[in-house]
Image (cartoon, rainbow, N blue to C red):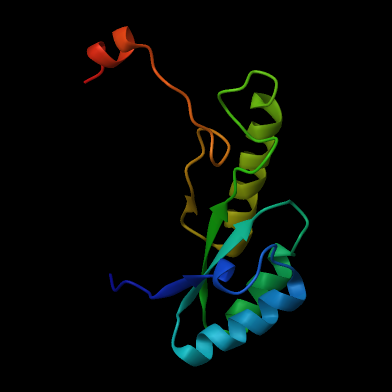
Length: 125
């Protein structure tokens, strides 16, 4: 299988919307990219159906990228369920776009840091 060369729309815009997606797809295809990485920052920012149509017209593939912004964190009991709902949405979007992957670190919100106790670090392998 030959690898495709792709680019994330974050190179040009955040958050992505339908209008920007169409412009970026055309620009990226003209540069020689074969697929777009499409971030799902907030469900509804852009239409997966319109994206699939436009990328299909250009002969481009898609990969879905998650964004673990504020309010998304699988390690926080209060945020776990809505975060799981968001991740399910990302998978649904990937299915609509025939994306074989949903990429991103999904454990915790972007930028979250914490320290392990010395005893836990010593038992980690």
